Length: 302
Length: 307
Image (cartoon, rainbow over all chains, first blue to last red; front, side, top):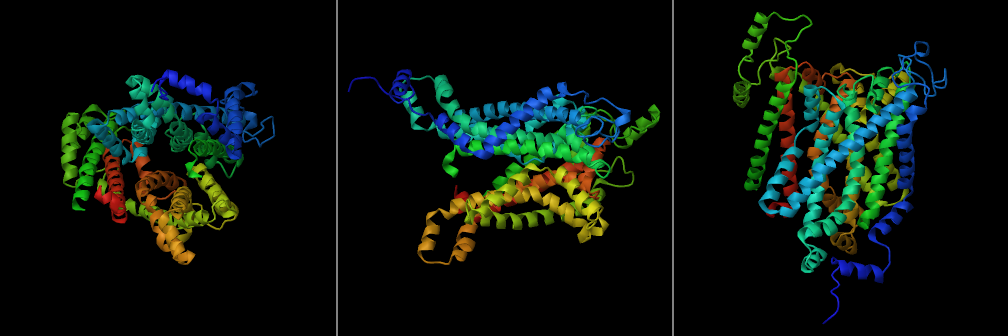
């Protein structure tokens, strides 16, 4: 038999295939499924709006988040120019809430990125190398899994004082475990797939196989897990803040705002209700997007 | 089976050792000391106090001493509560946390499994949509948001239930904290049950049972449920960790005299021995529950045992 070898991994094969069927790729398929999911689309729109608000919102307001106005102490919502009211020092709640949202989102994104880097590297190496190395690395993950992690985060905060960078690192270092398990499992499964074998037979180097075949196929589950990790991180941070170990005043995160609001709730309901609604809304957006992505990328659950 | 247990213990014990080591050095790396007062102690007194607790020795030596004492079951005296040992503090306070945790997980399992099964049987029906909606909300509303809101509603406005406090464990005082603690678990458990149930209901043996003409109730309760709740067993460990995390907040909000409240306060006050005692206690508890979960799983699913 003569003619080109149509191994899907070889460059020539890929080009020919692309020319032959200009069909929908798996990603295109997934995108369409996602767009049909009303909850996920709503989540994306609301979340985009929240991100924009958190980034530029504080600049548009007449108040700074830490600006104390003695005249406006305990101002009700929609009075004295405070749309969401003011707190015990007369600080504008909307300004504080936008700042808190910004801090919470930043922690969510950065800490998740930390966990992503550690988790993918750890899981991919374990899965690729296999054997004793895999066994040892995954045993370490098992061990860490069974620790009461919140205690270690609390100890970390107490030990080094709570600064924001430490919060990133501490929470990121806690959240990478599941990521590494997912990545390893996925890598193990992919390693034995026919198309990887075909790529190897077509003469691709190990590196090229990783970049062209393994990583794109890892992306799906990783993306899904990332969207579900971000809300978990935001929750962890606000949990720490609630215990007084997270972001320190006058800086605000959604957690510190809720903690403060809970103390004064009988005097000023707005201080509890508005930050809570923002927090729950944000978390729900992430969860809807995550669930939607999972259904779109991995439709076997339907 | 014995080998299975042995292998698990072989992992669990070094883990516990690791916990002790990391927690010990982390706590000691913290600036400040348990003997910091508003007024500075004179150097001689400070030296005496440190010597009294063996804290004038090199850190490595203190560590060895500590580990040896713990192996003998001696967790040392509290550094802040002068006349109490760590074990006494644990003994006096674990009951509140235990009652809260056990009630919460029992209720969460009952409610969660029921909701999950109902949702799976009516997949994509309104019951399903409703239950899954509640589950998403349950996961998204943090404990420390729902707790103050419930206190505001039932405690302050309706005045049906007390705002907080323990009151000897009276039912009225338990309702709100247990509900708050159970809610996120109900959400997770119902989702797990639903997913497991949907998968099992499509399996061949369930179809066989249907073909045999068994009543639907028997199929669901006897055949499907047993396999569907398997994932729940392995969730036992994480659930316990979740409850611990939740109890830190719940005990603070409802002002309950449990271990969770103690932990944060002790860590902030640098009460080394109390913090260490609690870390060891909780780590051992979680490791033990993970072990139990593994065993139950192995009993229920022969495939695990044989591999």
